[in-house]
Image 1 (cartoon, rainbow, N blue to C red):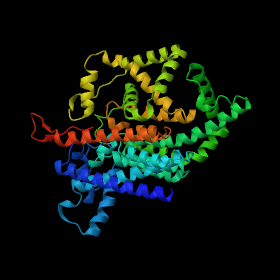
Image 2 (cartoon, rainbow, N blue to C red; image 1 turned 60 degrees about the horizontal axis):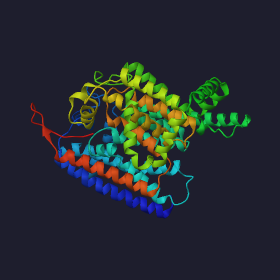
Image 3 (cartoon, rainbow, N blue to C red; image 1 turned 90 degrees about the vertical axis):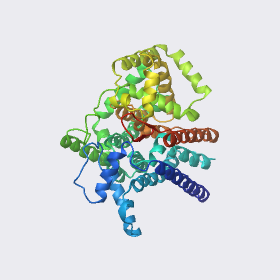
Length: 474
């Protein structure tokens, strides 16, 4: 980091933290008591604060990473400041932990952007800094910085894990991966992604060597055509690579720390008789394939200022014209998946405090054919997603898509929080946008954040059978 850029970034971090503190103060004044999932997280963390590590709320479905980190941060502060009474491990103090994670996420996002886009040497200072700031204010993530949820900490450790992978510190990366799993079990998928990037790099190298031998350098891995013949070619190469002892040995020598984490997680699943701890009835896995279509639509909306332009729409129309049979086949598969594999979680239909409730009620439940009418939009959103990542190698893209499917499809509940890490990974790997596009993206995120926080604070309501104040949230 150059000195001038360092000064800018430091000032930005300070400003971001100051504004977040003001918003935090307002949110906490309006909602002093634990809200939504906080009614489980806050009492559990307070038990840990009092040394009651053997007591566990069976309604909690995640591992105790958030509570352990909270105690590890709060206890020294309490001792140094000589704090006593109700302020110790209060709801506000516990929530403040996520505000610290927010600062960490901003810094990690900046370092990741610098590492991933290091080849762009000219006129990138303002773009790197603004890109990191914009992503740190990504609305779904930013909102939960003000509540005691696992999202901020979970995202922090996943980003840290990936950063260490990029720097080649694989033992440290695997250890941080364990920390991320302690926040949310499904983070094992993104630990696998970190290992997958190593495998992808080896496969890309082998692919280039093979094509060099065939004197077919005009068809690099990143430009394999999106077609049946291209898919067949990739599958045969992958099979050959995975059955080659020398290739497998090379991968294992590099990725063994991640394999150790995977083995430990597998042991946990066997002992626990499943991934979920606590209440399993509301977190049953299924093949909810439309989740990937929801994510593509979600990603299209939030990346609209960055990814969409006239020329990309034109390329999509040209692709339809060049390969009509391929897109007809994809449309048929999408219709089949929407028809046979759409699942609706009971929480999605019953809890009117979440935004997805209104998306489902006012869009998908408007008519039974709506979910099919949306298929062309899904096709475009998916194509736009893939086209935005065309600068990445083929096997990196396949590793990312595999992990994306694993992170979204088994989820029965449509919950935008589950899209945070996949979206950040997607956005980080897009080419570094121009300054005007970044400004528009930041303004979009700021507007959404302002709207959601305003609604949460001011638009309260009550259920007929309860006196508790209810609020709208992600």
